[in-house]
Length: 220
Image (cartoon, rainbow, N blue to C red):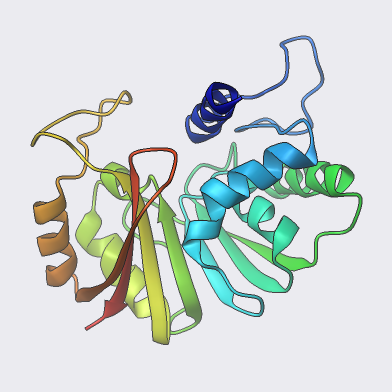
C-alpha cells in the first residue's frame, strides 16, 4: 500500500495523468485524479504544507492550469486565488473550468473559491501590488530566468503581513541538474539570494513523502 502511495505521489509531482490514453481527459495539463481519495492524498502530502487559510488572497506563480490550487480549495473554502503563469496553452479559462468541474464531480459539491487568471512573462508577474496574503511558487524558482525581476515583483505584490512559500527539491551537490535540465536549488546560495531580494526566512518544512522542502519567507 505504501509503495502504491509513493507511486501516486511521484506521478502527481511530475504531472503525469492517471488516465489511459484512450480515456477522455477532462482537461489537458497535469495530473487527473480518479477519485476523491486521490485529491485528498495529494492535499495531505503536498497542498496542506502551503498552510493556506480560508479568506486569504493567494497568488500561485507558475501554476499551470490551477490544479494544485483547486485541490487545496476542495478542502479549504473561501480562498481568493490568482492563478498566474506565462503558458497560455495550459492556463486559460477553458482549462481552469475543466479542472474545477472535474474536482467538483469527484467531491460531489461545488468548490467554494474565487479564481482569477493572470498571464505574466519571464520578467514580470503582473500581480496586483500590495494585495496578497500568501504567494506560492511550487517547483518554479529553479526555472526563473530573471529571478531578480520576478522576486522583486513578488515582494511588491505582498500585503504588509504577507508571506511567500517556495517549494523545491534541494540539490545534494552543487550544480546538480533536475530531469528537465534546470539546475537544482543549492540551499545556502538560495537563502543568500532571497536575502538579497529582500526576504527573511520564517519557516522551513520537509514533505513527508518526498525530498521537497517548503520555505516560508517574510519581507525584511
